[in-house]
Length: 206
Image (tube, rainbow, N blue to C red; front, side):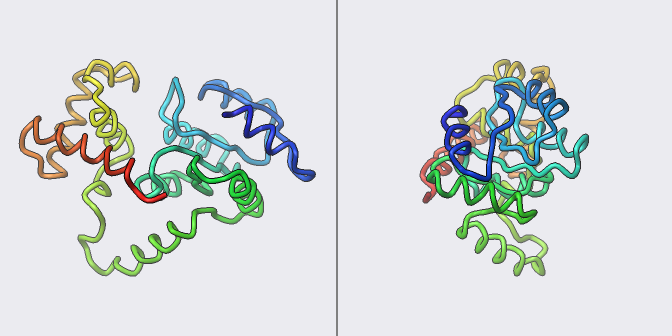
């Protein structure tokens, strides 16, 4: 998919892909060496959570715009990307024309989200007078949301620890915090919620 996107971008007369990387470590090295005008970042990486990499990029290169792409529903991740310093969020299901539009929007130093997400953000902003506005998932940190997603996909505590480079004890602490924030009293109740949450993302309108 990465090579296909690069080929698509390189067909544009005013755009060129100066480098590619298949991991967070490779991305950080490439940014230092190539000094790109922007980064197109897939949130699903083999060696690090994409949101964590985004925060690393913003910490070391605060003026470098990043456009995040993901299979995950924008309703859950777009605002987290923007809060982490990203300049836009694009779902992979969008067509190639929309990818080019998103890239050009970010290069103009503007924020890109879908029209559907723009309406959602404006609606959310209008409700800020209510102290409890937002869904239960909005109460979770980025790491807790990732742990919830992995449990919902059937991963074990040990597998999640290996994936996120955490000890099983730390994963259990995250799970306990999620249960407390979402009012889930037992582990079976937590697992049902996690599974249903992941399924709901897959059924969200594209």
